[in-house]
Length: 391
Image 1 (spheres, one colour):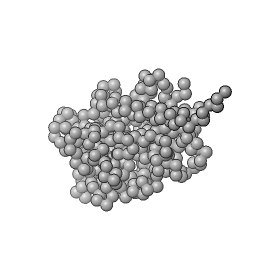
Image 2 (cartoon, rainbow, N blue to C red):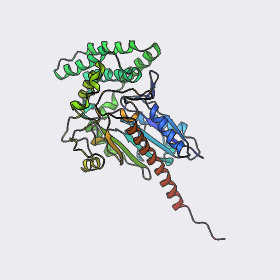
Image 3 (cartoon, helix red, strand yellow):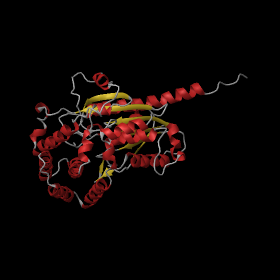
Image 4 (cartoon, rainbow, N blue to C red):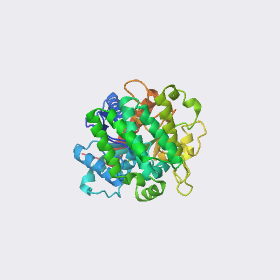
């Protein structure tokens, strides 16, 4: 049996592997296991892309990886992108795409592309990008990224470092931001890790500092142009997962407040969520046809505010193609970074209370969509095949 090939593209806080921690480790295992349970095989690969480079640069690297590894057996190909990775996937799939260093022969594999899945992707931009595009915002991006790695690897970074980030967000809002404070905090986190992990983290942070093109492009004004230039590929299934976390609701923070790190983590998440909740009347982060709220309500019974978000991306900005799951989760929950058993470490305390049952449901929905896209392609091929001549 010809295996399906699934390619995973990480987002703004993402990496393939960093400090001995796999960004998509839980997702890769879940997808392969579900294909195996259906009596099929799936080869899952993670693309190592620059975390904050321009979408074209990131998409070019994704396209090259698929071209070099997809083989010539004619098997189905799927691309799944988390956060900015969902935009990479859409860009690579677009029939009108032009990528640096990639010619048409390098994109021959798109004839085998069956689906594009986006998880928490900012299809219409995110207000957080405008904040991170500032000089002070860049420092806080590096600090939050360093804390992300430490939290995912160790379970909890040093309290002094987390306290420094909380103070920096507060001082930024009061226009008293001290860049040296954040620089010292980053060094503290790096020293906490072992030598090999520290070197990897330091190199990753240098990448963030060296190319900020993708952050600027995630601003709502820039994504307006992205939407004008990108087309969905005919015959490819587009599906999305969209999530939101409660904002400033005390009952959802009780678990986090039981530990000092949990309390500081909740404060950092709240700061990010409040920045993401900013609204732009001219360039709203939502489908322009106004269909977003009704599509969300098909999954969520409660009334959500227009600026609901996952801490990084507005909820309505995550809607593209067929919505297959909407629910409470923060930006990294759906890729397996939530508190619980089996080695799961949380990102930041969001109060979403995402758990293994919801993760399994999301993975079930994704794989069901991938398999459906393969079946649909086979049905179309059978319908287009010439009838056999009578003997």
